[in-house]
Image 1 (cartoon, rainbow, N blue to C red):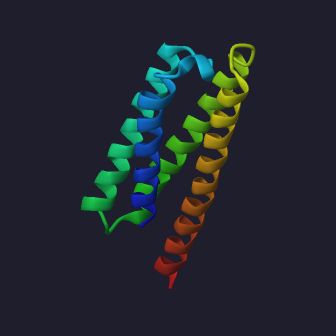
Image 2: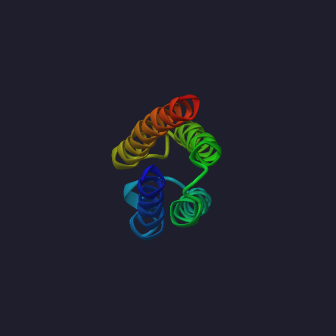
Length: 124
């Protein structure tokens, strides 16, 4: 189930970055090229998570590790971009990206708990 939640979240981020922020970029301030890169990364994460949810139900432990690392990398990249473009970002842009980072970090926390629980089940 955690893969489905991750996939839906990444899909929403992709849609929001492509449709919302790129259309109303003047209200957010992040450069268009940067938004394109972030949306492509989010789309790749969505595809991976949907694939894991739909086809690879047995091997949760091995499949969760890459998505946890990818989500954390996405958060670090986004935070770096927020810092780099902080003088261009509007309050809406700053709020969106910080909120996105916080939500993804919350998801990573859930994924880590799921990974830990799956390890404990294997040891039993």
